Image (cartoon, rainbow, N blue to C red; front, top):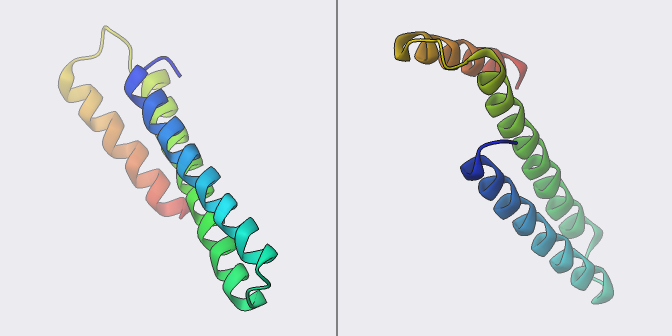
Length: 89
């Protein structure tokens, strides 16, 4: 991850997941219902998948665009990558 903005965003999202895991640990220690724990685990899984998609999107655009591309080219590449990721969801 060469972009500082992307790195910061990924770290923030991962810290959010870490906090969520801590909350689930507390739920298990407090003998919360399994259904509640499973719902929270599902939320974490969705968050992790979103982080992966975010990294994939930014990496794809970064790899496909170099300094010689015009701004219009970069917008077209970004649009294609977004369409591909939407299809994969």
